[in-house]
Amino acid sequence: MFAKSGAIHTGNLPYLDFIAPGILAQSVLFVSIFFGINVIWERDVGIVQKFLASPTPRGTLVLGKGLSAGIRSLSQAIVVFAIAALLGVRINWHPIAILNVIAIVILAATLLATVSLIIACIVKTRERFMGVEQVLTMPLFFASNAIYPNAMIPNWLKVISHCHSLTYVVDALRTSMVIGSTGTFGLTTDYAVLFLSTLVLVSVAAAARLYPRLGV
Image (cartoon, rainbow, N blue to C red; front, side):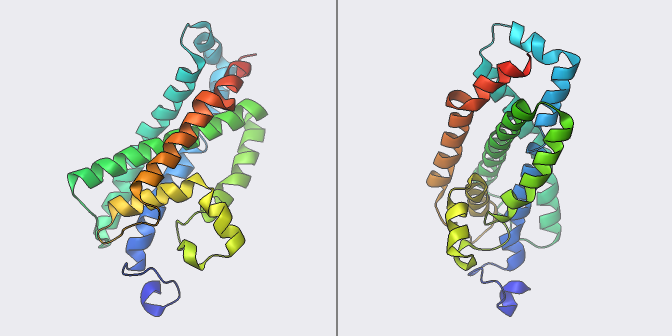
């Protein structure tokens, strides 16, 4: 409707087709970004201490928790796909496209869950965690290209969007999920950004170092 009225220019895509991948990314975001509260609960009941007593590398523990959020997010993808199909979205049902969507959902959820785990390790209480996550969730979503093209946003927000991993999640989903969509950055760039971001958070940056401190 918006594409036809000229309010939001989405190229050759109807606005419903354009926004469907953004809704899927939003679902993944909302599921994954609150994943850290489970880690706080595990700390409170003593499960984290048992994990840390094992010889398993800390980075592997963090990655495993992130991947579990990714698997859980696949149920969201099924629901969004079903609703999109009922609404007439031109979904690309090619097996390679579907596999791409699955891979992107898992990778995006792993990345976002790791961010959530880092926040949980810093704030350490459920009350603080919920407050921080409530503040972050909507700005993270609206700073991406989920509901409008990057071309129509202000230049300062465009800079933030290009540095924002959710933008590349939406771009990859839009490329794979919808017939006739070519994306903005290309799947190679999208995958590279998501892989490198996850690698930095899990293996190099704070996640693997902060997680052991949670058990203290």
